[in-house]
Amino acid sequence: MYHGHLKRDSNKYIKWVLLEAVEHLIKKDKAIGYRYYKKMRSKGKNKARVMVAQKLCRSIYAMLKHREGYQELRKRMAKKIRVSP
Image (cartoon, rainbow, N blue to C red; front, side, top):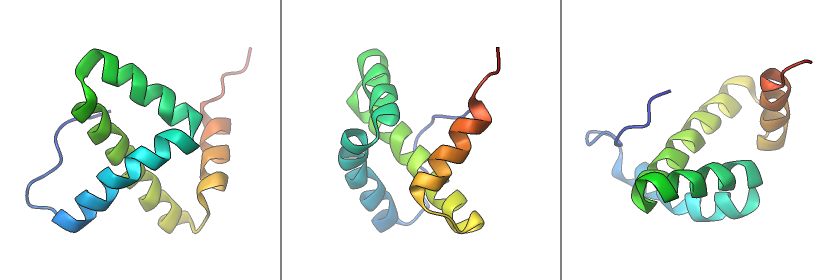
């Protein structure tokens, strides 16, 4: 998975909204919050915020594509990732 910079030629308002939403998302979603703090300790706050913003952007795309809410998407992804013993 790629965790690079946000593209410069993209919409600056969407980037701003995604980066602002990061602060709320890491408080509401414990799994994403854990990944944020782990990345923040190793790479810094700005890179961690960009990583979460990219994940949020991919989640929004998947929600629109599959016409489902955030909670349904998280449940579906959790089932997909779960490893059987």
